[in-house]
Length: 75
Ligand SMILES: [Zn+2]
Image (tube, rainbow, N blue to C red; front, side):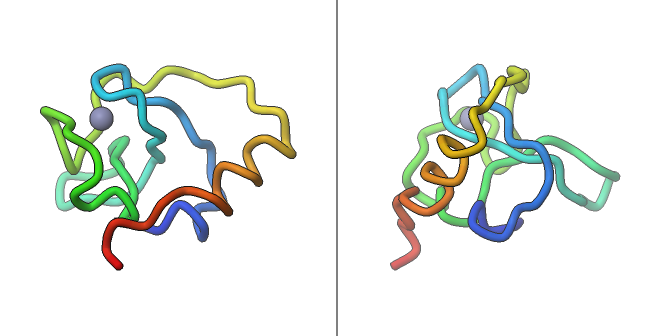
């Protein structure tokens, strides 16, 4: 599981919980999953995986802001 701050790939929105998710490695290959910041902050039925990842047409600045300001529940 990766930090949203370090995630360089595409960011989509999980249809189950409305929180961001990214494509990352799992034991069974690449799958859409939540980020390490979301450890206990999202009540997603599929956590740590994400449900249907909705494609977002991010404005570059908006995505940067989301990454920088996303609350980190591990702390
Ligand atoms: Zn989710």
